[in-house]
Length: 467
Ligand code: 4AD
Ligand code: MG
Image 1 (tube, rainbow, N blue to C red):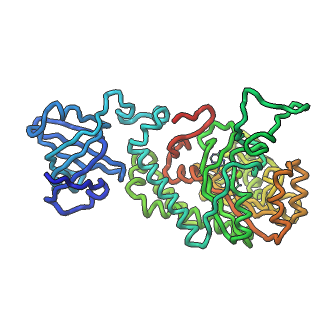
Image 2: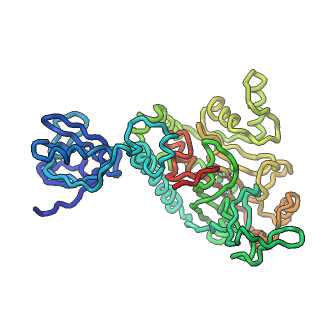
């Protein structure tokens, strides 16, 4: 018999040339058998949907059929027919089955309704479940949307380094990179490790942000964006933090605060619209199985303009809420860093819309943010989202060499590895700004998943680096 070329499940389900002989390959989701007929639901990852394989058990070896259990990988050939049953338009009347791989009864993804916590222990196998398939296909689509958004607007994709000698956010939460023998570290008279003989001849780490190099790109190419992995050794075991996450960081020359906030809003809305337009089947699945409010929430974000709120006005609203009896775990006062309970109160209860908060006290923000005339606040522009809290962190950058130097000195930032960054301010400085979107926080929002560990294939968090 002539071999039939494989058709992906996503394409088979669109075909209407009934009577054609077709071949599909994939993993068995369920296998129901009875005397007269067997039904195998087969999935190959190309779509959330399965194709139904109808098997006449009298035509196959009984023992062979019995072995085809959930998780097994098979190739099935047969005639594409219009389906008699409800739930699918077409199905395959099977004439031939080849088994690629059986799947024992100890297959960890066997049962339905297992908890996400349980599945995290089997992150290498959970990708084969409906939920993780849907999340990963959406993740791919969001990456495409991001490249398209920036490409269409004339931004250049700029590759910032992953290994760096500078701490962009100045929070000291970096993973060191070294080839030194940790059992035999050479130290100077003060007990400090000598790095001059290390691979790079200095102390280096994994980057927390591509922004500083991004600024070099923007002040040459006009507008750029980075999209790469970033690393933070913060010991935060929360459903919103990863030690390794992906960040998108556009940086734009000649942009002011209002235009920057416009760009942030337009960008997120574009991504959400893209998901609604391109991930319908997966979103409908997640809306049904994970979060009944998901699609309504995505549409809700597109409807209205985001609220633009200064930090000072935000604090006023929170203080009013407290005097009206609202209880927060952390007390509210001007100068504090907002906790996620405060962000979520503003977004979910007070405004019921996303908020772009701006003009923060300089003490709670990074050294590179542009100072306002009041000398107390800087032009940060963070986007706060329902369910998520902070999804974007951004700012206009301080373009004045003297003012930037003053912040660096005030904060005791070691300058020896930053001279190149300061050169942007020394040679043809220009007003500019940008922001960072946490990719996994966007995926959390778009999928309705509750834990950031469940929107990246293999999460890295404190004490977890399996797989
Ligand atoms: O607010 P952050 O720290 O800003 C920066 O890194 C700037 N250099 C960005 C820029 O202006 N170019 O981080 C930006 C975003 C946050 O709003 C959040 O969405 C995400 O990155 N993020 C994390 N996501 C997952 N796990 C973590 N540990 C994260 N830390 C930040
Ligand atoms: Mg931030």
